[in-house]
Length: 501
Ligand code: GDP
Image (cartoon, rainbow, N blue to C red; front, side):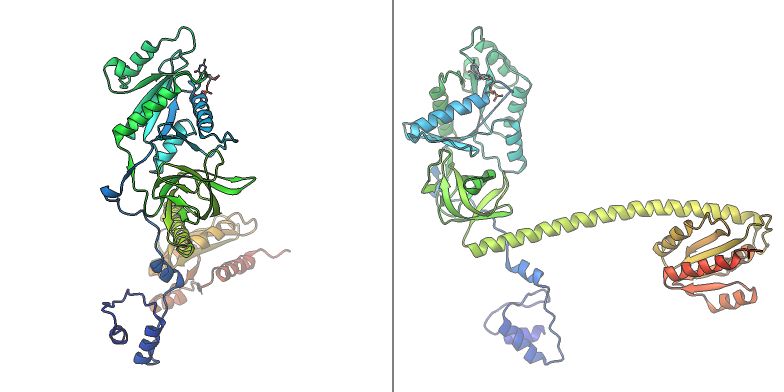
């Protein structure tokens, strides 16, 4: 067949091997012709073929330096509970809305952008707190350039302040301190800065390089200074991105909006999102129908660092999912299929692992049971000795059985059923021996000693043993269906039930 393929596919220089998948129906037809009807062409399962044709969407390689343009910083607000994170975000958002002169209803879309009179912009993630930060980090989608650490000057450094510092440090994100609530009487800014220095955040006033801005989020004091400090920090960091090429980004929030339907906020990190772009994210994809800002203003396009509330999702993604633009809806469908397939495979692998663990637990338990039963069996057998008839002091009718099976599993299944007969009131069922493998001469000895019937499940009996059994009048019963074997035992039991007088 490989030769026939080389022959049929003259136009290409593919090196065919047994793993090559052939999609071209003409080549397949030619090969069938060349090989004649005797050759059977077995198509590979559709799923595998599909999988080889469709690949996942992956980010593009890093853009060349010449394509990079400055972009606004993305800021995450963190700090101890009640130190004023929400108040600060609200104050900044209000300012942002006033400055854009739309003044409409601000939607909570998980992020908003603030434009400064200078033309610069700052993007704020408006879900305060550590959970959002660690969730993004754990998904490898930490879309944060700067952490604004809010510390209330009346309270100073608290437990969650330290935690935020640790998290920002671990993620290698620079910190800018907002010393909040300076409108309150008796606040001690210096003490707060000293406490911060003690946990490694040394502000400029203390001889370090961290900017600290005293603010009042409630009174909106010094907020412009804070934002200026952020833009300065951004300049120092030389934040840049390529606004061309396919869009890359991260899902900040996803929800079903009662008015607009499926909506997800995308923070663009590379490329420029436009209406009509086709994007995939996690298990969702969209042909972008509408892009809105946090103020509900429709945007023509969303360049890097712009949060955009996107409508047009066929399936909603999840927060933290990576967003990638693809060439077409067809491609998006392929990616979705590929991902669903991968997910299914992962699930199957997990199932398989769980089954393996169960099986090994089961085996351990089963072996322990077998050992236990064997030890009981040996104890019973030892006093009698081979070939010595057991003296039946007990007048209770008893059916003694020996079970031999082909594999542990079948023996176990039979024993499980027999166990339910253990307490039979009129006839006692005595399992005197069991094991895996053929019926052996030693089985005959045990059967003889206990006057037992040998049940052989799916196992042979060497001719010599059959002859010996006949001679000694030992019954060996062969079965290959468990319920028939059990029925046979039931029949034997009923034969032993004493006849009513
Ligand atoms: P979060 O838990 O960090 O989000 O803190 P909040 O923003 O909910 O603020 C907690 C409390 O502190 C609220 O009662 C706010 O009104 C108050 N607060 C926040 N910022 C200031 C401020 O600058 N000055 C004063 N006096 N109170 C503030």
